[in-house]
Image (cartoon, rainbow, N blue to C red; front, side, top):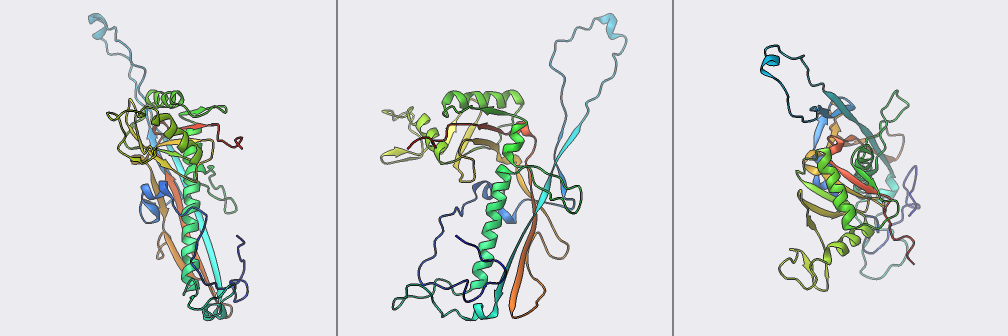
Length: 326
């Protein structure tokens, strides 16, 4: 629906009787799993480290004779490299006239006896709405964010999301194929070969891919009681965890995932990172300069994603997403 800009008044923010609803997602599962807007880590630099990496040489069988061992070989040392991400600014403003906040009893639309106005405090509603918007923007960014590091005051920091991280690491382009057990086996093999830790794995899927996954694994349980899954509903199956050769993987439907992709993330190594403003905190509400009979309030925070190294996670992109089905 439309958003009111500038000042909220009696006329552009009418009150209605009835229960409040929104069709937009209020759930941010990834953010909730890793600490929400009140957990995580803090930084005093907008750029922060996500991993310090080092390698071992390929394993070989040594061939050192007694004679050769008398003389020490050439020294060699492991070199480390650092990877990083950035926090990005989240800033929202509401501006409500005194008249708007005073007219709680003036109702627009259908009014029937005994119906009350749907909310009693316009300011509290708008602040809460902005906090949910920020949480939704954080969830979207943590999954879909495109990395950009500021090079000056006019260039915004943009935090790197997990799908972009995986694009330079463990990923499969399905090239329009339907999600299958074979594709899943391939991606888990690739993760094992890349060095994934498999500490606390969660698979995030959009609606179509979640149904496809349930269809893949439901066939194992038809007519079987021995291998029936722990979670099941009458008349159907809802797969919430799968067992692989390497680990157990939680399954989570996430509305912020692209329709053609799945993400497999090790949430044990992911955390939100907040940069505090001295004396104010990491996500705060404050009054802005008053120029008249209105309350102008901003909500401000600087938030980024500590995602660890790319080899911990994986993705499958380019899947058939059901859009061609009538």
